[in-house]
Length: 324
Ligand code: ADP
Image (cartoon, rainbow, N blue to C red):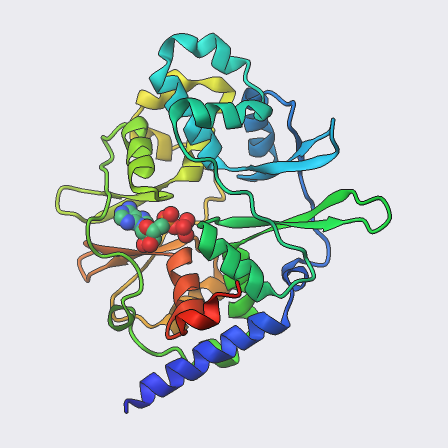
């Protein structure tokens, strides 16, 4: 058999073992800041708070019942935009919506509520990964309960990015064995790609994200060369202050207003190997990779969920997976 196959399997097994002996708690930095939003806050105001804190998501807290009330993410804002598109005459009402109305908005536009899964911080990291894959959640809150009072505490939130970064930084001895090209292992999506151009409106791109259930759309020129990437989180500054009518602006206009510290977009080729992708994750803030050819033409897209799925599930027997 191919020695690359053997190394690859050994690498994957090594990473899986690593995830089983580490906890979600291990992923957290020694000290961190956690912004939690009160469920009674106006949605309009929540936007500014996220922007001011340089974050794109926050746990919600129901202070009346003293319970965790779900995670606020860019998907929620996209839902509000869809609501606004379906009920354009209700703009005054939209302005008065509180975070606690997000579930009603989901119902009104007919989307399924996102399952709010959480994990205990001291459970194996492997478990958090499996839950994320099962529910397609991109981030998962770590919830602890106080033994005495029985009250819940939100310890932190871990993302797919954090987990892959943790693997990349701490488990290089196994990731370096992953030497098969992404093309060969079928990592990512290569058919039926959703794309847009600089002249598409922000609203068009949002509709694409909803239709395909994806969190980023490559922006290409007429020759399919990749110019940029519009991400679900790019929606947040677009509607700052409740400016839903500005979504008719073009992608080009919206992207020109990106923050100074924007991490940039990352590309790779079909010949690149997973070990070098982990290398990129180790060094940079990567949220997905765009696969291009030598002429920068779009070939595919590799999301963090594609990587996580491959690393956790490739070659596993269905039976072994039942327990998660
Ligand atoms: P994540 O779940 O990591 O946030 P996405 O939601 O962007 O990633 O991706 C979900 C799935 O859709 C992945 O399998 C990915 O390869 C695929 N995908 C991502 N972007 C696009 C796109 N623009 N067109 C088609 N498929 C995509």
